Image 1 (cartoon, rainbow, N blue to C red):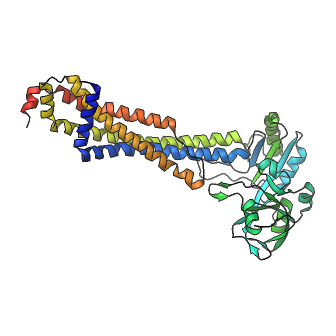
Image 2 (cartoon, rainbow, N blue to C red):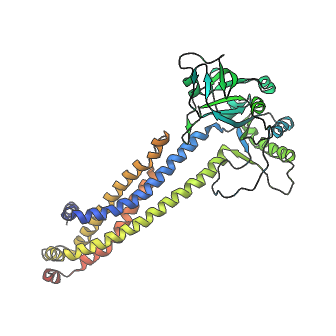
Length: 407
């Protein structure tokens, strides 16, 4: 029997039992959908974090009190705050050419200019003169703080792009005086748009000197959100990290036999932690999908066994007119192949569309998991062969005389 004729007969057999074929197809779709949708969503999130962490360049590392990304969760052992005094002492003792910048949020509220007022949710952040280079921001207009303005705690501010658009849609904000929680600040610059991170705008912020923030809100010994260290040349990164860790341990009086009571992160280390997390999620989603595929495969085998029983007389007639065992075997294997491949393709399509809903939600680049899609095609082919072989073998083994007698 020619392959073209075998494909045609297999397709006609599936069309003759549309409900049964559709139910079998559904199981295969669910299995592949579970794998592809979860893997696609994880890859979208992975792309999102990689794009969002570009501010940690090859010349920068970050010091925080606790890990920036935690996978296991649970209760953290208490660690002392990283204070501004410790950072200043670290700045004075480092011998390598580095630039330290601190970052800490102090308050949230509305910003006002004359009769104009922003929506609540503007975050006031304290930082210093090295903020732009260390944290990957750029100026749109105006300038940033000087070292003198940070040292003397001047009442100046730099606005995020969204805040500037809300308060000053038609005029330049530079030189204007705005108020935050009653305190006046002179606007000296506006930052370029940074976008959102996990749905939170990075442009609904205003920045003031860290010393000004301490004067307005107190607690200079509070824990700083992060301390960024930028080296003059990328090749100095390793040496700068070693010296920074050593000096900070001395400043924080960490005993020699104790581990660091702070975290040092680079772009690569943060990506490594997140890569382990995404691999775990991918394997979990794939595991669920494999279980669904196994269930679908058992369903295919059962339905094909029923089909063999129902078509016993047809098999007998075909054998009586000259069909060989391999013709019967090939026909039933093709039916299983059709069901699995069609279900797999539909599952891949629906899985990619569903997984990329995350991309639409957070305005991220869409992805297509080519490797997993190819694996999905191979898996459904394997399911077709494994679970379709026994029913096909039974059909091929039927004796033509006994098949013709079957009622």
